[in-house]
Image 1 (spheres, rainbow, N blue to C red):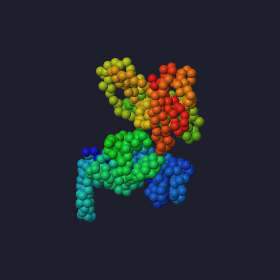
Image 2: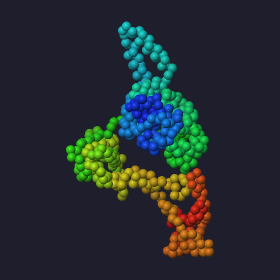
Image 3: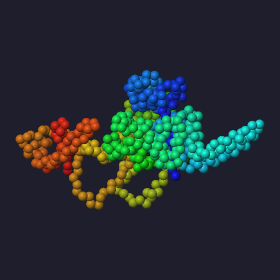
Image 4: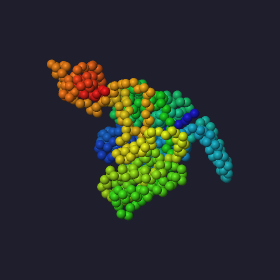
Amino acid sequence: MDRLACVDAPAFALQLLLRQRPQWRAQPAAVVERDAPHGAIVAVNEAARSCGVLPGMRYAAALALCPQLCATEVAAEQIADGVEQTCKLLRRRSPHVEPSAEEPGVFWLDARGLEAWIESDEAVLAERTTSVRGPAGQVTTNRAAAHRTRQTAESPLTRWARSTRTLLAAAGLECALVVGFTHFGVYAVAKALRGARVLVFEREDDEHDFARRVPLRRLALEPRTRAELEQLGVLTIDDFLRLPEAGLRLRYGEALAQLHALASRARRRELAPRPPGEWPSAAVDLDFPTNSLEALIALCGELLGPLLTHLARRDERAAALALRLRLEDGSVVEERLEPAQPTLAGADFERLLRLRLARQKFARSVEHLSVSVRPTPALAPTSELFALARGREPAAAQRAFAVLRAAFGEGCVVRAQLLSAHLPEAGFCWVPMDAVQPPQPRPEPPPVLVRRLLAHPLPLPSRSRHEEDGWLLRGVSHGPVLRLHGPYPLQGGWWRAEVARDYHYAEMHNGALLWIYFDRVRRRWFLQGSVS
């Protein structure tokens, strides 16, 4: 049976800060995004939360609620280092550890099969304790026996959870640890415990019932969304589960709809552990700072060669490259590149680097350069040995996408994804396209009309009351309107800005079929698109 554990170190950035400033521990304290009145609150302790200070607030608003609030910034590098150090500690208790990408301080651990390891480890420890002899040998034996008697009533996972929390406390991290069955369930319960205790569930239904009673404000929701839900009386996860998932997706987006699916157990999320080990890297300090593109490319090639050779010895490939440049004024420029597929060809990375750095204009010369690569296991392409030759080459398309991303940024290769929305212009969004999907044509595609939308509706001339059949929508070139089909009314959006439209299909004299609507709020006609 799958068992998961969740470790929640509340206000993780703040706990890292309190290691440096222990005098703030007894006071309301917070971490801000930037030390300015409009800087957002990132993390707070319980003393600040009791005063009404919540993550997402502005620094000025938090000071108005709690004038004695102590706050400052914590660099992203310090948080990343703290997460990595905590992962190293937790890997001593479980081989698979997944840190949260959205909430630093939240970690999931694989707790499957740990019972036998825990019992054998404790048996060895008890044998070593009992074998101690000397003037106080009998006392030591009695203490070991009493310790075993006290632990007999606890399950092995409970003892494992307590010892894991003790290990983190010794490193200066106060946390809550919950062992259960589902990814969301253990997370929600751990957030409700506020870093105070250990809890182990033996049944999945018990975990689900406990999670339903967790206050919604304990979860990391967007502040505006949280405020709107509270105004609707949605205060707990149980209230949240009573809302329709489709309505949440339409009103708040895909992220909140997925959270609803996880909370209701309609969708299961698998553990995605971070592999141990760091990226192989190499760095060089330049005797003569430079901002020459050719010199920087040559230096990157010299540093990259030994790294790729090191990966080849380990039967690995480079799946990504991270470049870090420190300029003379102390500023840092960081770039990340991914080839079409993991490779050991330095020329592929040099070509992508040339495209990316050609767009950069450095204010100062580069004095320090470091390169690191993300390793990934090499996969033998045995499945393609007997594949038939194809007219199209997907690998070439992947290489072209990698070149486009290097030249114009990571978000330049996208595809359209349909959404469930009542407005036509909101019925789709653009999502990144990582891989080429092969076409799947139908044997005999039926003839259909395609409705093409404009990015922004175009205003049309007003309709004459005396010339109903002579309305020139698009000027003389399209001719007058022959027939109007409709209206098809559409109304909604009362929670933000009211939308009231009457849609029509207009047959033009030149044969075009236009899709238009009359905006009853603004009392104007607009062109939404065309049909062909």
